[in-house]
Length: 175
Image 1 (cartoon, one colour):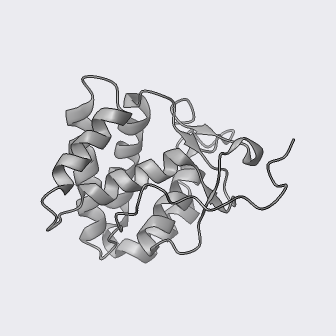
Image 2 (cartoon, helix red, strand yellow):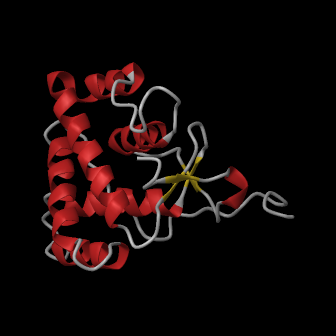
């Protein structure tokens, strides 16, 4: 998976979005994504057997943890390979969301069942914008499967406004 997702250095991020205030589902996804994207010698690129990631999914999803993790891995693999640009992922422990992490969370939030009649059209438009031509249907199916797996365990994702950024601290991004 590291070939499809790229870890960014903190200094190269645009205006950050704080991790505080994220829902439990959003924190689980961002934390897991960052750890799965880390290249670790001898453990395989996706860290399939990482006990910490499995424990986090066990806490959130109970006995369905392995299935939800497999769904997330499949979604990430398809997302990373289908994206127009290589998605940038924050490093573990970084307190800011990258723009690509925000887009991924927004995509999954829009993929959840919703009473909002515009949600399916907004989901489709976002997938069309982010993915290469011809990859739309697969990413739509994978995102709905992942959103359904999260929803089955009470992990709903809020559809946040596009402008989630906060103002940078004075001098933080100065050269």
